[in-house]
Length: 164
Image (cartoon, rainbow, N blue to C red; front, side, top):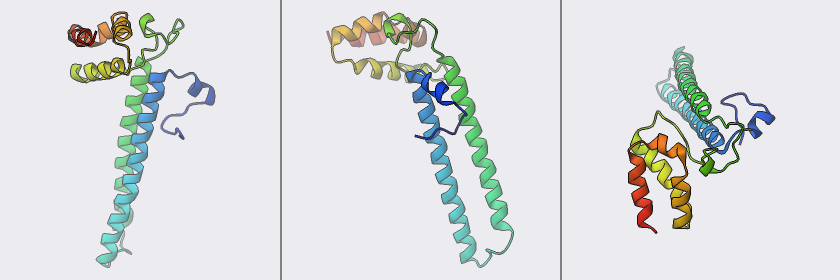
């Protein structure tokens, strides 16, 4: 996948954590979808002008400029959100990709999400662990989840405990 939403060197790209890479891929996908929609909107407007016999007027260029500006604004919002969310998930020097150690936890830590969304993200991540005993052991050792979920931490613990 080509990443052009933010400028990253090959070394910087390789140094990203799993969570940061997911954030980057999601943002790039959103940007690409916006550009596809932009091209479709321009073509639709061009077809309307052709059918009305007004293609040689300045309306098409004006509308294209308006659509380009709106797309650029939306891409800027996605870029800013990406940079902010990636800064929240900066790996520390002692990260060894072990969730029990509070390193690269494997799920997106985004404090702008609602607690319900956070709960679902963490639940889905831990439900991917097949062994219930291993799942609950990893979850109880996850200090990031305790801070990230707040009161929902205990609720999710009770859900995982039912599988043992």
